[in-house]
Amino acid sequence: MVVEGDQGGCLNAREKVYPMKSMSLRGSRKGQSGFTLVEIAIVLVIIGLLLGGVLKGQELIEQSKIKRVVNDFNNISAAFATYQDRYKALPGDDLKAANRWTTIIAGATPATAGNGDNIMTTPLANVFTGTVANEGGLAWQHLRASGLVSGDMSTAVTSTTPEQTPFNSSYGFGVNAAAFAMGIAPTFCASLPPKAAEQLDRQLDDGRPGTGTIRAGVATAVKNTAPIAAAQAATAVYVDAQATPWVTVCKIL
Image (cartoon, rainbow, N blue to C red; front, top):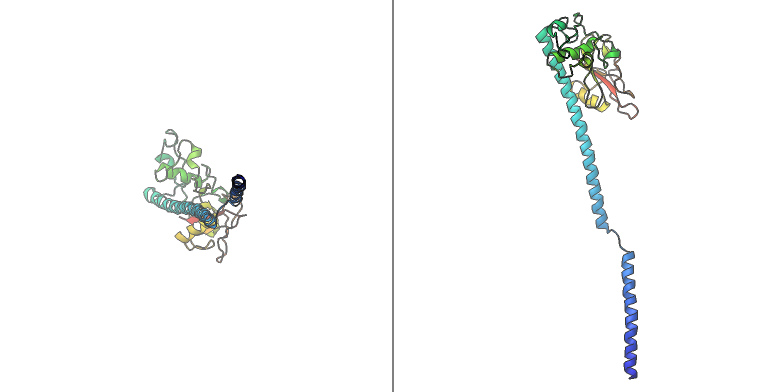
């Protein structure tokens, strides 16, 4: 009887001790729960892949914009040459434009003629602000009227408004005081980030902002800065800086 009682006591002790020990072990495991080194490594790899994908995507978008700018410059050059060959006049300077397109503006108003002096008369300050008052603005109107360039012909204002670049800045035509010492030949300009301007220059010219048929001014803090008459030094290079994210670049047509 005593032995049985002792055994019962032992059993009771086990029932009290072992469950407590088991609970202690479970609590210890909970306190030590977390990511293993392998799991952390996998997460870091995934994050790296995601960041790499984002950066690659941004680079592809940037390159796509630059490619479009290059195409725009080539297309405008071709349109300009075609207009001269077809009408024997410079777009914007065309003396017969009003007689040629008598109802082109909103289907009722004629185009505005240039002065026919074979010079695209546009003050440098107005390269990116095309209006009927300067032949750089009229170049847009005449090219659109001829169907060589698309654009809004619903009003006189929209017919002369410069097209926009993929970088949400402006294109423009101009010659008066020649841009960047390139003479009195018509020029096609754009306000671009320095990297885009440099790639444009490298693909179509010599890659130098101060020489060749494509030239650029110094970088500025604001976009659509008018070109100046003076050229940069022959040794100048394109400078990409956060404080000056824009440069005006022009090409002889």
